[in-house]
Length: 204
Image (tube, rainbow, N blue to C red):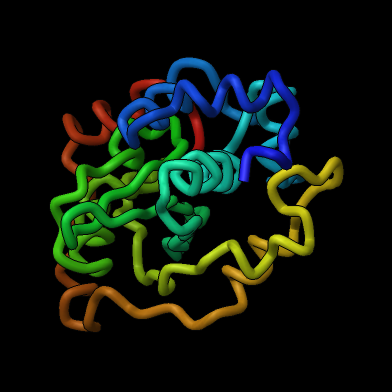
């Protein structure tokens, strides 16, 4: 798989030997892409060159790194109201699901592989997924999408933005998380959790 990348890029991926190291790389060495209005969808190659990524771009980079470790390159889209969607690179270890993610909301990043199914994993993000008004905004999630289907489109190394991936994630069906009764009872964010979640930046 790494034959698609040049020597510098391969050297970076060779350091990312565990999901935890992939997450640390996204956190410490890749800045948050603040291009206005979600105007970019960089390929993993472009992310490595520019050194920045938003959640979609970071998830694709993580999917490449996880693929190198033997995991299928899977993404899950989290759908929100009055907020932006968030994207996770997910993987299984010993039958349980974990995730790697790029976000400057501190609670929307990685999860250990301890969740029995995708719904459990997604629900672990609920209390941490909020907009600037303090509303908890997570409402639905997609099935895991294998990016292998986009290999012929060059999603890993394209010099052009790879909109085919987020467009597909937006088009497929999503599973609701909450009933109408649950929605009526959702409280605003606790001020302390809000403050903790905002450590680090300004957008998902």
